[in-house]
Image 1 (cartoon, one colour):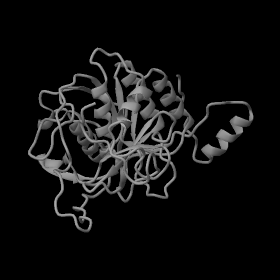
Image 2 (cartoon, one colour):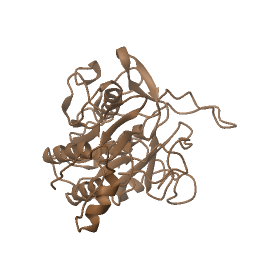
Image 3 (spheres, helix red, strand yellow):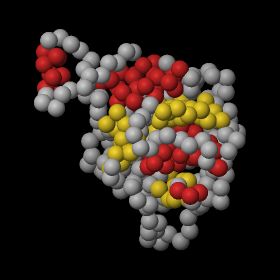
Image 4 (cartoon, helix red, strand yellow):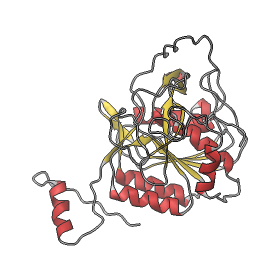
Length: 319
């Protein structure tokens, strides 16, 4: 697809101009809206255990699949010089502008979840994978790092051009016709798209791109399999995965414990990647989703529900 952007002067209203052009028969018009990374700004405290709970499994559950596949991600910039990425197969580029410190911290965290070297607290889920990291997000003052539709679509185009086999999108925002068209095109190429379910609360509106048809939206749960309090609810949610107090790299080589649906999405991305062959061939997306549904632990109401989707997806289960 070809996308053109126009800057609107200060004395005009962009939405009003779009309406006027639409009335004149111009189609496929949309605002160049912002999307935010789905991570809590502060470290999450250890959740109190439910009543009568005395022991829990190690959290988060980890594994190190030796699968060699091509995984794409759109996020903040990934600094490939960090020690956790030493010897990893990461190709990184950027489509964002502005400062990148906080966005880069988020990007490094997601990349580390996927391919990072083992540390005392965590390891990458698929350390042998080839990761293509497209930066579309930059810092935005005191709010969460954000990226425009145009930057995100450029990043997605780059990933498809590099023939990735699955795409991780740990961000969310409003419904947008241009983004919807890009996602639909990617799915038509039989490339599965995994997205964060959103951190806008149980009563928040549907979060996109997770809520688009065909996208696998992942919500977050804690070590006791309770829903992350800030996670979106909705019938578009597909699965639940670890997303509370996830150890990730942060400043000066330290480990931080972060929460959000951002950090749940890579667990599903990793599971999907393990279903794919390393020769670039793609399994049918619907078949892979069915295989994931067969291994979930049902939570909440029986069957699919708006809080947990089909249920909790155990990391690196035998498929």
